[in-house]
Image (cartoon, rainbow, N blue to C red; front, side, top):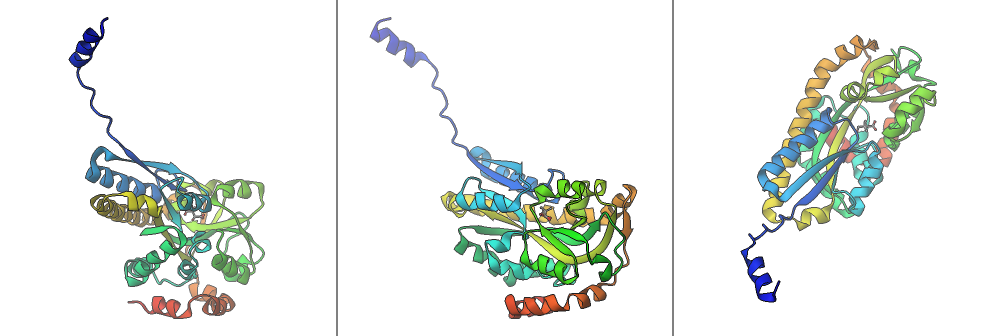
Length: 319
Ligand code: PAF
């Protein structure tokens, strides 16, 4: 073909549409898709993709090692993570205040504080650690399970090997009760329970249900010993690269994610205990919460000294 013919042929070809640049946002979280975190991530994805059109693709992945996922967000190999505050204190120490046992009276108190200036100021602390705290989500009130015995009183906890999160505040509480706290990532929990490395663990009802922990644990006591906040953390450089309009849409989508996540926790907590009984767990529902708080006195004294005592008081007194 002569050069002139080739040019004519090329001009006759229909122009290929320019490829649409699509930015991927990967959100990791440690639970099955059909869980309260999955509900939050999915609602965020749907809301953001609807608002930002085809320019963004939100990919949801499971990673049940929360500390590792936070590190990945910090170095920018993934964009966002939904995590409990369990390991977050190792990055942003101020959040440890939220992990104090029996700090929140109930769910309304916890959600109210996190949505108030107290929680929003705490989100602002993440930027000094190379992270962006985007929105508070929720894991729920944590309860104790084990394979050895019914736990009715604080004395029954003595001697139990209990897996805790990698969280100093929680570990101190369990050692004060006379348990042997064994910190490990959630990814290691089921094998540790199967092999008897630990006797028990503590997690909210939605986690126990979604992960079938009833298959490796016989006894559940509704201790509600600590509220477990969750949080959406993102890579700050990723947010900075967005246009102001896209960033605003992302923040709105994150709020929709938090609302879906909280709604799912509420409904899982309503149906979960019956479901776990149906699956064969022995459930202790009558718990003397005051007795547990009395048994934790030494730990509370230490929290006042090593954490932010004034902030703890403000949170307790929040109405
Ligand atoms: O127990 C934990 O590590 C956390 O509660 C979990 C299950 C990963 C959810 O954040």
